Image (cartoon, rainbow, N blue to C red; front, side, top):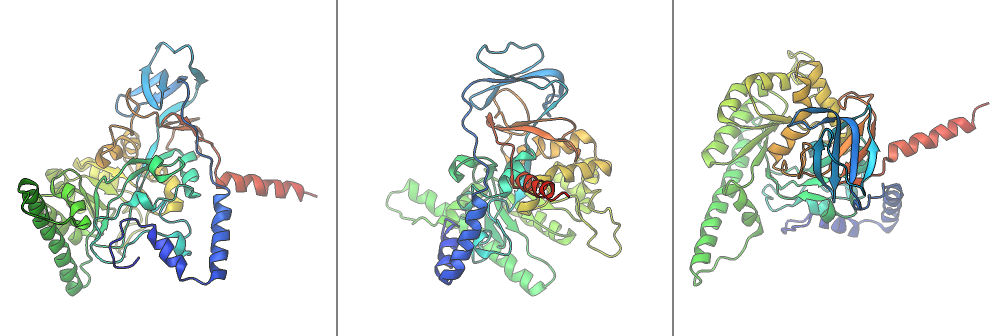
Amino acid sequence: MHSNKINNMRANKIISFSILPPSFIFVISLLLSSFNGLAQTPAPHQESPIAITGGTIHTITQGVIAEGTIIFKDGLITDIGKDIPIPADAEVIDATGKHIYPGFIQGRSTIGLMEIARIQESTDLQETGHINPNIRAQVAFHPVSEHLPVAAVHGVTTVVPTPRGSIIAGMPAAMMTDGWTWEQMTLREGIGMIIEWPSLGDQEAYKKQTALLQDAFDRARRYKTARQAAAENPELQQPMDVRWEAMIPVLNGEIPVFISAGEVRQIQASIAWAEKEGLRMVLAGNRDLDLVADQLAEKDIPVMITGVISGPTRNWEGYDEGYKIPLKLYEAGVDFFIAGDAGAASTYRIHHHAASAVAFGLPEEKALSAITADAARILGIDDMVGSLEPGKHATLMITNGNALEMWTKKEQVFIQGRKIEMLDKHKRLYKHYKEKHKQHQP
């Protein structure tokens, strides 16, 4: 995008297309339209009560209910338990022998902001410049992305599309994986502010970038003071600046800063800075976290583990360095959740990361909570999703087994009570080429 402050990141596509050759625009438009033609049809609003009976209900926060019943109406859970009355007009789904779980939450992803990595016009992740606190991820969210139904049918019902590439990259939003428009799919906007802590590899660049970060917060504080003074005294005037206005909730402690840090020196520097600035901090990373686990626990700093399935980053590290991070944080008493891969095409496998953590010692209950209730709480959306409780959204799934196991089938997914279409591009292609193979049998 250009250097002028554009609040809607979609402008990037418009500007970029305007300078492309017409023939190239045609090819890209044809390609993207072919993908959109396969998009999942959003489910209609829930019209009547639904009761799922006989299944094992994993509430996450209130234990497991064997042979239980869960009832939801108008998108909200109304009752849950054993031997509870079922409304006469309810659609009854027999889940005997099945399991009911809350939908998975992928806490950091490029989904909805990137379709095809090699096609620039389908990528909308980054704003020009280093300081972009006003960027709102949800307005660039692509509601007919082919990655969304793939995630949804695998039980990923909430995603957090996250801008990147700047020191202050903007504000992520919690989005549903089914819906017609980004407005309809927005669960909660502005859940935090993304800060990418500068690398210490180049000390000169590090000093310049941290100075830019500090200057941005100093200017935002002065702006906040000036705006308060202008509100109290009509004779004073302070024009609105969308950059500093966006930072006021951060300064007020209403939303956290999600600070990405890749190694121990970055982690320690970012913790010291956030503490000095009086900010609510969530640390995002997947390396060296065990080296500062006691410090994180003592200071009550939550962690977003950005991937469990990963190889070592140093020659002397064991192959399982990343796989053991969740267990080490758990044993140290650190509050954390698992976010998994950031890539849009990998969003559907968030439960693979949780399952891998179990294979390396993390208790299964904690691993499941790390992609549901814990993720919702740290992201600030636990009043709506993350567990199965009356009053929360009926965002859940029916499975034929343990939801963390790779071979378990998600038989039906509901998002706000809406029974989504259990079909995606993967399944369409599977049926397509299965038929081809069948037709070419001798």
